[in-house]
Length: 370
Image (cartoon, rainbow, N blue to C red; front, top):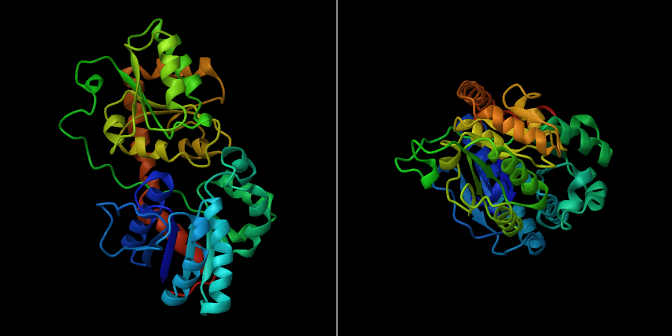
Protein backbone atom coordinates (compact mmCIF):
# COMPACT_ATOMS: atom_id res chain seq x y z
CA UNK A 1 0.00 0.00 0.00
CA UNK A 2 1.12 3.57 -0.62
CA UNK A 3 1.23 5.67 2.55
CA UNK A 4 1.90 9.40 2.78
CA UNK A 5 3.13 10.72 6.14
CA UNK A 6 2.34 14.42 6.58
CA UNK A 7 4.66 16.22 9.01
CA UNK A 8 6.38 19.58 9.37
CA UNK A 9 9.93 18.22 9.01
CA UNK A 10 11.53 14.88 8.11
CA UNK A 11 14.47 15.38 10.43
CA UNK A 12 13.88 17.95 13.17
CA UNK A 13 11.97 17.73 16.45
CA UNK A 14 10.17 14.72 17.89
CA UNK A 15 7.38 14.71 15.30
CA UNK A 16 9.77 14.65 12.36
CA UNK A 17 11.87 11.88 13.89
CA UNK A 18 8.79 9.82 14.67
CA UNK A 19 7.51 10.06 11.09
CA UNK A 20 10.87 9.23 9.51
CA UNK A 21 11.47 6.28 11.83
CA UNK A 22 8.01 4.92 11.06
CA UNK A 23 8.79 5.26 7.34
CA UNK A 24 12.01 3.30 7.96
CA UNK A 25 10.00 0.55 9.63
CA UNK A 26 7.52 0.43 6.74
CA UNK A 27 10.40 -0.15 4.33
CA UNK A 28 11.80 -2.86 6.61
CA UNK A 29 8.50 -4.75 6.68
CA UNK A 30 8.05 -4.48 2.91
CA UNK A 31 4.32 -3.96 3.46
CA UNK A 32 4.09 -0.36 2.25
CA UNK A 33 5.63 2.33 0.06
CA UNK A 34 6.01 5.34 2.37
CA UNK A 35 6.40 8.97 1.33
CA UNK A 36 7.10 11.79 3.77
CA UNK A 37 5.22 14.94 2.81
CA UNK A 38 6.58 18.12 4.45
CA UNK A 39 5.52 21.73 4.70
CA UNK A 40 9.02 22.68 5.86
CA UNK A 41 12.35 22.62 4.05
CA UNK A 42 14.54 20.75 6.54
CA UNK A 43 16.83 18.16 4.90
CA UNK A 44 16.00 14.46 4.91
CA UNK A 45 17.84 12.37 7.54
CA UNK A 46 21.04 10.79 6.26
CA UNK A 47 19.91 7.37 7.53
CA UNK A 48 16.53 7.39 5.77
CA UNK A 49 16.43 4.65 3.08
CA UNK A 50 16.34 5.72 -0.54
CA UNK A 51 13.01 3.88 -0.87
CA UNK A 52 11.38 6.65 1.19
CA UNK A 53 10.54 9.65 -0.97
CA UNK A 54 10.48 13.09 0.66
CA UNK A 55 8.12 15.49 -1.11
CA UNK A 56 7.70 19.19 -0.33
CA UNK A 57 4.51 21.24 -0.36
CA UNK A 58 6.31 24.52 -0.97
CA UNK A 59 4.81 26.26 2.06
CA UNK A 60 6.23 26.85 5.52
CA UNK A 61 3.25 26.19 7.76
CA UNK A 62 0.30 23.83 8.00
CA UNK A 63 -2.34 26.55 7.71
CA UNK A 64 -1.03 27.41 4.24
CA UNK A 65 -0.87 23.79 3.14
CA UNK A 66 -4.58 22.85 2.85
CA UNK A 67 -4.91 23.38 -0.90
CA UNK A 68 -1.41 22.00 -1.72
CA UNK A 69 -2.22 18.86 0.33
CA UNK A 70 -5.49 18.41 -1.54
CA UNK A 71 -3.77 18.75 -4.90
CA UNK A 72 -1.05 16.35 -3.83
CA UNK A 73 -3.58 13.70 -2.80
CA UNK A 74 -5.36 14.07 -6.12
CA UNK A 75 -2.21 13.73 -8.21
CA UNK A 76 -0.48 10.97 -6.21
CA UNK A 77 -3.52 9.01 -4.97
CA UNK A 78 -2.00 7.34 -1.86
CA UNK A 79 -4.19 4.74 -0.18
CA UNK A 80 -3.64 6.46 3.19
CA UNK A 81 -2.68 9.94 4.38
CA UNK A 82 -1.25 9.92 7.93
CA UNK A 83 -1.06 13.34 9.60
CA UNK A 84 0.40 14.19 13.01
CA UNK A 85 0.06 17.09 15.52
CA UNK A 86 -3.35 18.57 16.28
CA UNK A 87 -2.90 21.77 14.25
CA UNK A 88 -1.64 19.78 11.26
CA UNK A 89 -4.49 17.30 11.68
CA UNK A 90 -7.01 20.14 11.69
CA UNK A 91 -5.62 21.24 8.31
CA UNK A 92 -5.46 17.68 6.93
CA UNK A 93 -9.20 17.20 7.58
CA UNK A 94 -10.41 19.94 5.17
CA UNK A 95 -7.58 19.08 2.75
CA UNK A 96 -8.81 15.49 2.56
CA UNK A 97 -12.39 16.68 2.00
CA UNK A 98 -11.24 18.98 -0.82
CA UNK A 99 -9.19 16.19 -2.34
CA UNK A 100 -12.20 13.89 -2.43
CA UNK A 101 -14.60 16.49 -3.77
CA UNK A 102 -12.41 18.21 -6.39
CA UNK A 103 -9.44 15.95 -7.14
CA UNK A 104 -10.90 12.44 -7.03
CA UNK A 105 -8.90 11.10 -4.09
CA UNK A 106 -10.37 7.88 -2.67
CA UNK A 107 -7.90 7.14 0.11
CA UNK A 108 -8.33 7.19 3.87
CA UNK A 109 -7.25 9.76 6.43
CA UNK A 110 -5.55 8.65 9.65
CA UNK A 111 -4.57 11.14 12.34
CA UNK A 112 -1.77 10.74 14.87
CA UNK A 113 -2.38 12.14 18.36
CA UNK A 114 0.80 12.02 20.45
CA UNK A 115 -0.51 13.60 23.67
CA UNK A 116 -3.78 13.58 25.60
CA UNK A 117 -6.13 15.91 23.74
CA UNK A 118 -7.65 17.09 27.00
CA UNK A 119 -4.26 18.62 27.98
CA UNK A 120 -3.20 19.92 24.56
CA UNK A 121 -4.58 23.45 24.62
CA UNK A 122 -2.67 24.32 27.76
CA UNK A 123 0.61 23.33 26.12
CA UNK A 124 0.10 25.04 22.75
CA UNK A 125 -2.83 27.26 21.77
CA UNK A 126 -2.46 26.05 18.17
CA UNK A 127 -3.47 22.57 19.35
CA UNK A 128 -7.14 23.39 19.85
CA UNK A 129 -8.74 20.55 21.80
CA UNK A 130 -12.27 21.75 21.08
CA UNK A 131 -11.78 21.65 17.32
CA UNK A 132 -10.18 18.23 17.72
CA UNK A 133 -13.24 17.08 19.66
CA UNK A 134 -15.43 18.12 16.72
CA UNK A 135 -13.16 17.23 13.82
CA UNK A 136 -11.49 13.94 14.72
CA UNK A 137 -14.72 11.99 14.15
CA UNK A 138 -14.40 12.76 10.42
CA UNK A 139 -11.11 10.84 10.12
CA UNK A 140 -11.17 7.15 9.26
CA UNK A 141 -8.92 6.30 12.18
CA UNK A 142 -6.63 7.66 14.90
CA UNK A 143 -3.33 6.26 16.16
CA UNK A 144 -1.70 7.07 19.49
CA UNK A 145 1.67 6.12 21.01
CA UNK A 146 0.41 4.72 24.33
CA UNK A 147 -2.72 3.15 25.87
CA UNK A 148 -3.49 6.16 28.09
CA UNK A 149 -3.50 8.53 25.12
CA UNK A 150 -5.71 6.10 23.21
CA UNK A 151 -8.21 6.06 26.08
CA UNK A 152 -8.14 9.88 26.28
CA UNK A 153 -8.87 10.20 22.55
CA UNK A 154 -11.80 7.77 22.74
CA UNK A 155 -13.24 9.52 25.78
CA UNK A 156 -12.67 13.13 24.67
CA UNK A 157 -13.87 12.70 21.09
CA UNK A 158 -16.50 10.04 21.82
CA UNK A 159 -15.05 7.66 19.21
CA UNK A 160 -15.56 3.96 18.67
CA UNK A 161 -12.73 2.04 20.38
CA UNK A 162 -11.89 0.04 17.26
CA UNK A 163 -11.17 3.26 15.34
CA UNK A 164 -8.23 4.17 17.62
CA UNK A 165 -5.05 2.09 17.80
CA UNK A 166 -1.78 2.13 19.73
CA UNK A 167 1.26 2.52 17.47
CA UNK A 168 4.32 3.43 19.58
CA UNK A 169 6.98 5.82 18.32
CA UNK A 170 9.80 3.78 16.82
CA UNK A 171 13.44 3.86 17.91
CA UNK A 172 16.20 2.44 15.66
CA UNK A 173 19.19 0.68 17.22
CA UNK A 174 21.79 3.01 18.68
CA UNK A 175 24.66 3.55 16.22
CA UNK A 176 27.32 3.56 18.94
CA UNK A 177 29.56 6.01 20.79
CA UNK A 178 31.98 8.25 18.98
CA UNK A 179 35.62 8.11 20.00
CA UNK A 180 35.66 11.59 21.56
CA UNK A 181 33.08 12.47 24.25
CA UNK A 182 30.95 15.51 23.33
CA UNK A 183 31.64 17.20 26.68
CA UNK A 184 34.66 17.23 29.00
CA UNK A 185 32.55 16.06 31.95
CA UNK A 186 31.79 12.81 30.11
CA UNK A 187 35.40 11.65 29.89
CA UNK A 188 36.65 8.58 31.74
CA UNK A 189 37.56 9.23 35.35
CA UNK A 190 35.21 12.19 35.78
CA UNK A 191 32.40 12.21 38.40
CA UNK A 192 29.10 10.62 37.30
CA UNK A 193 26.91 12.82 35.11
CA UNK A 194 23.11 12.96 35.04
CA UNK A 195 21.52 14.31 31.87
CA UNK A 196 18.21 15.77 30.83
CA UNK A 197 17.24 15.96 27.14
CA UNK A 198 14.13 17.83 25.98
CA UNK A 199 12.77 20.95 24.27
CA UNK A 200 13.02 22.66 27.68
CA UNK A 201 9.37 23.63 27.76
CA UNK A 202 7.80 24.61 31.11
CA UNK A 203 6.11 21.25 31.66
CA UNK A 204 9.47 19.43 31.49
CA UNK A 205 9.99 20.79 35.05
CA UNK A 206 13.62 21.77 34.93
CA UNK A 207 13.00 23.70 38.15
CA UNK A 208 12.34 20.44 39.99
CA UNK A 209 15.34 18.73 38.39
CA UNK A 210 17.80 21.47 39.33
CA UNK A 211 16.43 21.75 42.88
CA UNK A 212 16.68 17.96 43.29
CA UNK A 213 20.23 17.97 41.95
CA UNK A 214 21.17 20.79 44.33
CA UNK A 215 20.01 18.63 47.24
CA UNK A 216 21.94 15.62 45.89
CA UNK A 217 25.08 17.75 45.55
CA UNK A 218 25.11 18.38 49.28
CA UNK A 219 26.36 14.82 49.87
CA UNK A 220 27.36 13.37 46.47
CA UNK A 221 29.98 14.23 43.86
CA UNK A 222 27.97 14.32 40.66
CA UNK A 223 27.23 16.61 37.71
CA UNK A 224 24.22 17.56 35.61
CA UNK A 225 24.04 18.37 31.89
CA UNK A 226 20.85 19.79 30.37
CA UNK A 227 20.67 19.14 26.62
CA UNK A 228 18.23 20.99 24.37
CA UNK A 229 16.98 24.40 23.42
CA UNK A 230 13.74 26.08 24.43
CA UNK A 231 12.06 28.65 26.66
CA UNK A 232 13.22 26.97 29.84
CA UNK A 233 16.93 27.32 29.17
CA UNK A 234 17.42 30.87 30.45
CA UNK A 235 15.45 30.25 33.69
CA UNK A 236 17.42 27.03 34.19
CA UNK A 237 20.73 28.85 33.79
CA UNK A 238 19.58 31.47 36.30
CA UNK A 239 18.50 28.82 38.81
CA UNK A 240 21.87 27.05 38.44
CA UNK A 241 23.67 30.34 39.09
CA UNK A 242 21.43 31.26 42.02
CA UNK A 243 21.98 27.90 43.72
CA UNK A 244 25.76 28.05 43.28
CA UNK A 245 25.88 25.03 40.94
CA UNK A 246 27.82 26.48 38.01
CA UNK A 247 30.77 24.14 38.62
CA UNK A 248 28.47 21.11 38.66
CA UNK A 249 25.53 21.84 36.36
CA UNK A 250 25.35 23.30 32.87
CA UNK A 251 22.96 23.67 29.94
CA UNK A 252 24.58 22.92 26.58
CA UNK A 253 21.82 23.89 24.13
CA UNK A 254 20.79 21.99 21.03
CA UNK A 255 23.14 19.22 19.85
CA UNK A 256 23.12 17.11 16.69
CA UNK A 257 23.29 13.74 18.48
CA UNK A 258 22.07 13.86 22.10
CA UNK A 259 22.52 10.11 22.45
CA UNK A 260 26.28 10.69 22.56
CA UNK A 261 25.52 12.30 25.93
CA UNK A 262 23.07 9.58 27.02
CA UNK A 263 25.46 6.77 26.14
CA UNK A 264 28.01 8.06 28.64
CA UNK A 265 25.68 9.32 31.37
CA UNK A 266 24.93 7.86 34.78
CA UNK A 267 21.19 8.22 34.08
CA UNK A 268 18.70 10.34 32.18
CA UNK A 269 16.32 12.24 34.47
CA UNK A 270 12.92 13.23 33.06
CA UNK A 271 10.65 14.94 35.63
CA UNK A 272 8.04 16.02 33.07
CA UNK A 273 4.46 16.77 34.13
CA UNK A 274 2.93 15.45 30.89
CA UNK A 275 4.13 12.85 28.40
CA UNK A 276 1.93 10.95 26.01
CA UNK A 277 4.89 8.75 25.17
CA UNK A 278 8.31 10.03 26.20
CA UNK A 279 10.43 9.33 23.14
CA UNK A 280 13.60 10.49 24.87
CA UNK A 281 13.20 7.61 27.33
CA UNK A 282 13.30 4.93 24.63
CA UNK A 283 16.17 6.76 22.91
CA UNK A 284 18.21 6.80 26.12
CA UNK A 285 17.38 3.15 26.78
CA UNK A 286 18.63 2.22 23.31
CA UNK A 287 22.00 3.77 24.23
CA UNK A 288 22.19 1.75 27.47
CA UNK A 289 21.39 4.76 29.65
CA UNK A 290 19.23 4.08 32.76
CA UNK A 291 16.17 6.30 32.96
CA UNK A 292 14.48 8.09 35.86
CA UNK A 293 11.07 9.49 34.97
CA UNK A 294 8.12 11.08 36.68
CA UNK A 295 4.83 9.23 36.36
CA UNK A 296 3.59 11.94 34.02
CA UNK A 297 0.04 12.70 32.95
CA UNK A 298 -0.55 10.97 29.63
CA UNK A 299 0.89 7.67 30.85
CA UNK A 300 3.84 7.50 28.46
CA UNK A 301 6.60 6.90 31.03
CA UNK A 302 4.47 4.32 32.86
CA UNK A 303 3.88 2.51 29.56
CA UNK A 304 7.54 2.63 28.50
CA UNK A 305 8.92 1.54 31.87
CA UNK A 306 6.09 -0.98 32.37
CA UNK A 307 5.10 0.41 35.78
CA UNK A 308 8.71 1.04 36.78
CA UNK A 309 10.18 -2.34 35.85
CA UNK A 310 12.45 -1.19 32.99
CA UNK A 311 13.27 2.22 34.47
CA UNK A 312 12.80 4.14 37.71
CA UNK A 313 9.29 5.61 37.88
CA UNK A 314 8.73 8.25 40.56
CA UNK A 315 5.71 10.34 41.57
CA UNK A 316 5.00 13.46 39.54
CA UNK A 317 5.95 16.83 41.08
CA UNK A 318 8.03 15.21 43.83
CA UNK A 319 11.44 16.82 44.22
CA UNK A 320 12.68 14.60 47.10
CA UNK A 321 11.79 11.49 45.05
CA UNK A 322 13.96 12.77 42.18
CA UNK A 323 16.88 13.29 44.56
CA UNK A 324 16.56 9.80 46.02
CA UNK A 325 16.25 8.18 42.59
CA UNK A 326 19.43 9.93 41.45
CA UNK A 327 21.17 8.84 44.64
CA UNK A 328 20.10 5.26 43.94
CA UNK A 329 21.35 5.48 40.35
CA UNK A 330 24.84 6.32 41.62
CA UNK A 331 25.18 2.70 42.74
CA UNK A 332 27.07 0.77 40.00
CA UNK A 333 24.95 -2.37 40.34
CA UNK A 334 21.74 -0.36 39.99
CA UNK A 335 23.02 1.38 36.87
CA UNK A 336 24.08 -1.91 35.33
CA UNK A 337 20.70 -3.52 36.00
CA UNK A 338 18.64 -0.67 34.55
CA UNK A 339 21.00 -0.35 31.60
CA UNK A 340 20.35 -3.98 30.64
CA UNK A 341 16.61 -3.68 31.28
CA UNK A 342 16.40 -0.52 29.19
CA UNK A 343 18.20 -2.12 26.27
CA UNK A 344 15.76 -5.02 26.44
CA UNK A 345 12.73 -2.71 26.52
CA UNK A 346 13.93 -0.54 23.62
CA UNK A 347 13.81 -3.57 21.31
CA UNK A 348 10.00 -3.59 21.64
CA UNK A 349 9.97 -0.24 19.78
CA UNK A 350 12.03 -1.33 16.78
CA UNK A 351 10.83 0.43 13.61
CA UNK A 352 9.59 -2.74 11.93
CA UNK A 353 7.51 -3.69 15.00
CA UNK A 354 5.84 -0.26 15.17
CA UNK A 355 5.27 -0.26 11.40
CA UNK A 356 3.68 -3.69 11.57
CA UNK A 357 1.28 -2.47 14.28
CA UNK A 358 0.26 0.35 11.93
CA UNK A 359 -0.30 -1.82 8.88
CA UNK A 360 -2.27 -4.38 10.90
CA UNK A 361 -4.59 -1.59 12.04
CA UNK A 362 -4.98 -0.24 8.51
CA UNK A 363 -5.77 -3.63 7.01
CA UNK A 364 -7.84 -5.21 9.76
CA UNK A 365 -9.70 -2.23 11.22
CA UNK A 366 -9.86 0.23 8.33
CA UNK A 367 -9.99 -2.32 5.49
CA UNK A 368 -7.18 -0.70 3.52
CA UNK A 369 -6.24 -3.04 0.71
CA UNK A 370 -2.56 -3.45 -0.18
